[in-house]
Length: 385
Image (cartoon, rainbow, N blue to C red; front, side, top):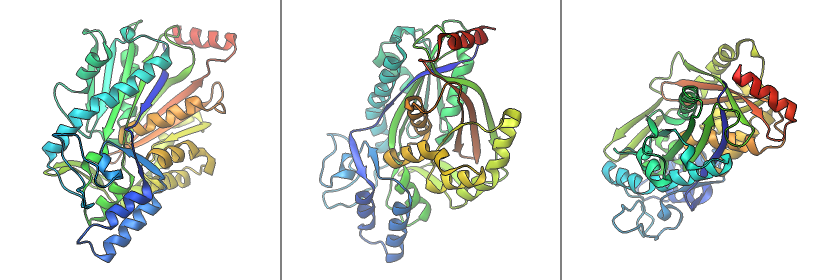
């Protein structure tokens, strides 16, 4: 049986960051030289992001106060502060579960299934940690059965949603009634810092907060018809890049190394990695590419000889939400599910990039709920064969 994504739900924090305003906040910090100011303005302006969302209200409104007992990231004078890693993680523990549950509830509502139908939960996050963690809280907050089987994928970075879907597809094939809830939650803004390091400036210019959830099953009769069939997955390590995309834990937050070599490495490696993955399947009709940044999308577009419109969904999500790490690719797939121009049977290639440098791939097929009955019957017969 072929597993499929029945529905996808998304959620973002209520605080919206306008790219020009947060750029000016970083550029106005005391003690930075003119070169750093120019780097900040250039990085923020080149990101092709209009707005992002954050759990830190004071980032959007200088003088706003965090909730009692929570760390302050910007003081009343607009000075960016540097809470400890422990304080940042405590905030993650306090606010992450609600955002994850919002995305999960939306996915369940879109699937036509009750929470009681969920048999497995797969959670993903690289921006905070605790035990018991998100998987445990989702069982409690959504009222799932205490016997739900849980799995957590941590610290895989921006590429993690595709391995999570791969795990979900495997779990969906283990029993006929399996319904797998995949939830990706990232609070990247918790780890921002003032810095003159070009890599930290780039990170501050693109990363954002968000959550996304997908309901996966291999039973064609479970949940609403249609969705995205999960045909197959692939993983490739590039020949270089191990030190160019790195995610470590520091004393004042998780530290992201995102060197200028990353887009160039992707540009050099992408054709070979995708060619090996697709094999004889031919070029897919639709692309869902994780927007690590505008330059990454530009390199993928050039490296694969794609027309400009091929990455329209990826660029739109980047522009409206920024880079939400693992959750981002599900935002893109959600937009493709809503897109009436993605027809029945259209093949979708999903690509995401993670530390290592790793290229994660997935090949999906669009199944429309309004497809002719005979077409849906063929899908069901193929899934049960």
